[in-house]
Image 1 (spheres, helix red, strand yellow):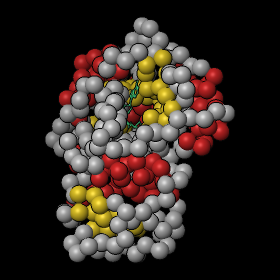
Image 2 (spheres, rainbow, N blue to C red):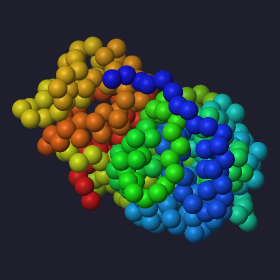
Image 3 (cartoon, helix red, strand yellow):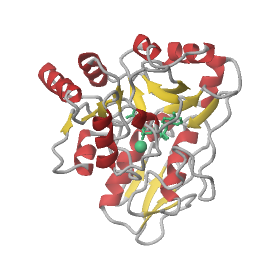
Image 4 (cartoon, rainbow, N blue to C red):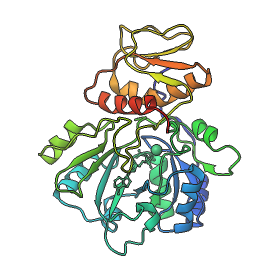
Length: 323
Ligand code: TXA
Ligand code: MG
């Protein structure tokens, strides 16, 4: 296994049809560079309610709004200096900003779950951009998986999650980044990373020229704030972290040149020890191994630096006791 090139063949006609479905209040699953999203017109409360229903997502967990460019974002939220710098450096791309929502911005209150802040991002994937431009609406989209399950990084993963629902799925190949976007909260007193991603805390701090509070380490005893559910990204198998080797019957996920080579129920996320490649492979690996139905997936240690912080965040959530 390796990172697949973004090969896909979404036609203009499919984009037009998908954009029309969004405008008509239906859901459309679409690719982004992070994970696939389950999108709806963010200004249409009924459409947004369908996202929560389809995902079986708790209503208190707010959604990210996707827009085509910075101008569209300016209509919805109030930027400050740090936000402008981050948007300039990383948009379009895998970065979500939490900013004060503008009043009467038209966004359904179901999107923000009643908060006065809004999560917003400009995705980079060409199919996502085409969809947003053609729909001409802000699109609310969580990851296109049932609540609590592993996020999808291919159209086939999405089809697995929502069989027989009639939801249109745009195919944009394998998600290049493979982990959900880095979320930076700039609505509070101090910048804070709410969710680590492939844009690292160090990169964020470099651009804003000040420290950002690191994301809380997932733990079962942590309070349940939005997006801080300890058990998340969970495959069916139990996850055992910091393994030295697989016990009999266990699947094994390794990393780097010293880990075992790929084999039966053995995956190396990146034989060369490249964290970016490991991030892109993680969710597909969890799904693939899960389908082989081992009782437990043992995971060897992954360096907790740079993008490794985001990988370990997802692994800790996958390993947390299920609610
Ligand atoms: O990469 C991504 O961000 C993907 C793609 C589809 O864009 N989306 C995604 O959405 O991961 P979702 O719904 O799975 O995660 C959104 C996270 C949740 O943890 C939610 O609690 C948090 O964003 N969030 C949304 N609005 C917020 C707000 N106003 N304040 C704090 N957290 C917020
Ligand atoms: Mg999600």
